[in-house]
Image (cartoon, rainbow, N blue to C red; front, top):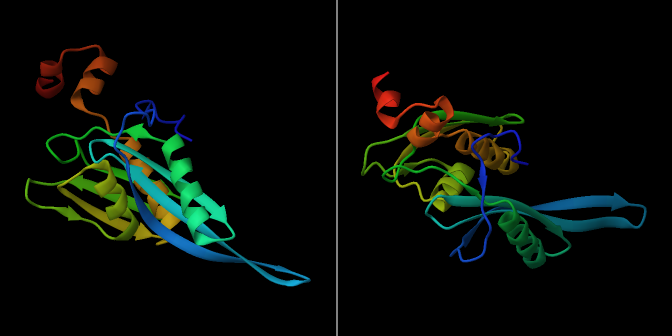
Amino acid sequence: MFKKYKSAELVKPGGLDLKDRLVGVQRVTKVTKGGRAFGFSAIVVVGDEAGVVGQGLGKSKDVASAIAKAVEDAKKNLVRIPIIKGTLPHEQKGKYGGARVNIIPAAPGTGVIAGGAVRTVLEAVGVHDVLSKSQGSSNPHNVVKATFDALLQLRDANAIAQDRGISLEQVFNA
């Protein structure tokens, strides 16, 4: 899932204090000749509120097991996101399907200015001050994945200096 991102650092769930947040539960229906078969799909975001976050999807005939499956799936997809002083290193856009998300760092005390699925993901990461705008599709699945797309493209100054083979001072003074 995260292979196209150079800076994506996968994290093992062992030893982390992960909190799970339910983004949404959808009732899905399969129509067969015997009638309608109802099921549920749940999307969950887990994070330690210190830069580690993951998202997962679970499907089942009942809500509780769909959520449990989603949490297990999310723990398999944990990544580390760079956070600097409670906000992001730089502005970033992400997209997935018809959803577009723009996340912008903010001054201390601003809070998380985001709606719905974007807010859930940013709070799970541990970002305290951020502005965001979600455009296009409001489908929670696509909005969560678009937010992850934006977060996984973030790079801190140390990573940029290492990629360019220069010192940290040269990154800012170049």
